[in-house]
Length: 406
Image 1 (tube, rainbow, N blue to C red):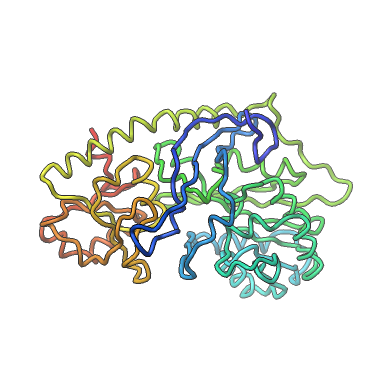
Image 2 (tube, rainbow, N blue to C red):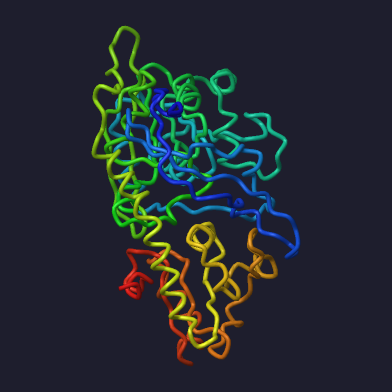
């Protein structure tokens, strides 16, 4: 067993070895450029029940090589989150609020419209002293140490409210990261921490959930461990349903001096349901790989190849984890910056949707979230009208490739 990055217990068991893979954002400009490969192995902590990467990739290897790469998180729930925040006992409308990354800007904008004015967002260069021009969440999670948090506190003052959307799951050293969060908070202050909910992906055995930038995979039952281990109090957890991946929002309070925070779970109180679910998830991987390959054999039995729509990390994970790259002729993407580039490994070309042709391509796999499938299919209507079919790589899509696996 190795040491868990969340609870610090030496109780981390290896459950699934996925092999060596590239960083999906490191698209290549030439097909023969070398791609650096990294080990991706999942573990489960039998003490706190949180699934995590056994060997996280160093943040410097995750910094994107292009300044136009970004990630969008779901935001339909943010108005309700801000309503919750405005009802927190923050002391005054001048509560000092700090967002950890640019992902928090839209939340701070909402808070500004509700009257809060002492609002700040951490700058990787100005506040964390990094010289990486494209530094983002992968850099903030690594450089936000307790010492850095103290410097930020000296600059802005202690935070009454900390917003941290979709960064805790990236933290390679979650204990250090949460210690920094605690350092930044004033006593009685709140951290609003939002992470993806892995529950649905675990239950439907969707392995595209696994991403080299996500170190920890939380559920509603396990997220509380992040607070309790570090002497913080989780007052509330809310859950929001979205297509493909749900969202959890935790309201975590720093106790005032003299109060007592709840103790963290220990190995004597193991979250057996979470551990068993993780083992079941790992055990299902070989079978689903075999089924996907059989489906792709059938789709290409006439000699035509497959295309994939969407040159993002979900596509890379699905193709590489399940060894499906040999079926694919090219990847379609509507972002003009990506066209003419190549996936990092293997070097599959990225092209415009006009390249879709039923003479060459039998089926286009959809590597875009289910909620935008109809929009993508409408944009590629010529391919569909000529007899080309669209099949989603995701288990929760009505067009899922799993319908073809028997």
